Length: 335
Image (tube, rainbow, N blue to C red; front, side, top):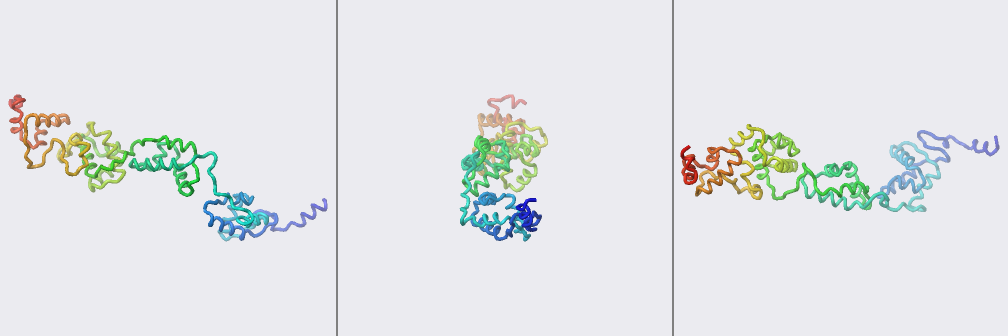
């Protein structure tokens, strides 16, 4: 063995050898002072990361992370003396890393953030997860990108994610364009009108991507939630002018005198003071004439009501209705 190798081997002490608790050897020293210095830098400069400081000190990021974990847990930890010196020099002889710039494979995130916020303002039930699903983007990826942007506006976003999100101009159901004029009384009228057509609550809930329980709770409380609001409006688009399959739902609605969709105008259904088309308040006097009654009968006939049902809805006896219609419909008198 050469004298030089012998001298180097004889100079090795136990602290220089790799150890599970003490870390790697090689002129090792206690890491506590250096790692406390790193913790102070991280606290004073939130934009810096452990990895950035490790690279600046020419230390493996995983080694630094493991050493910090041990020191924070109160376990003894040794690192190479040269590495400790380089860590202690950060912020003094060695300048701190610059604030992280946007990665070269990313784009500016602000347009994406603005677009997501615009969709959420325009639509009910437009969560970040739903927008991501519509854009065919991983919801956690989009959420993380928005959180990172809130923490550091200079952080970018994947170009592919940005392209997909910005391409979403409209959201499908169960999201629904926000209508500020829609009231709870209008939602209740829509729900009852769909029942009057023969749609059950489970069918309405399915069409509106909500639950029957949510609709039942709303019918009792008359206080809507965003989910109920979007669900009823979505179902209204699909079901309001199609007859439903349930005779029982129609009978129950008739017993309760619930008006069908065509009894309401879209511009007045949300106004508490309006009354349905073709209905009259109890005791109110109506000046009937033949053209008006014919118009009302044609309206209700389109809804599938029989003549007696039409007369009852209009507050007329069969005898009085026949008298009004005698001029143009003599066959009614003969019937």
